Length: 171
Ligand SMILES: [Zn+2]
Image (cartoon, rainbow, N blue to C red; front, top):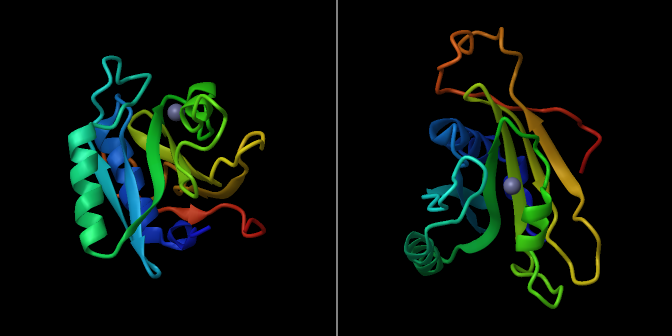
């Protein structure tokens, strides 16, 4: 499993920023990586009810994957946000991650979920890939922005987010 992007504050910040930018709709995108260098690519959410669901715009996704492949990058994660929701995988998220026969829809690909409240990213969680026959994927990383009283976050509309690890004991 290639999870080194989960240690990369710049990548996590980019994901959190996209979640704030797209609020009150769900933001979504992918993380691609080459060696230990990862980047987040925000993609359009074309679901008919984007406040509660997401569907990555397929042409944009294909283009991004093709461009990444040409750079030698591989898909390592899919991210999306939960406006006014928690940083955990929903039943729908889990169902989406599996094929009808129960096998993983995206083998080896991690999932990132961002909780956004009041247009501010509050928590970001990274989940291990769905495995065939296994139950819910485990959370392998959680990041949380500083308190709302921190400098630069007081007006509720600030675009800059700094995330810090919440639990050093996690892998
Ligand atoms: Zn979700």
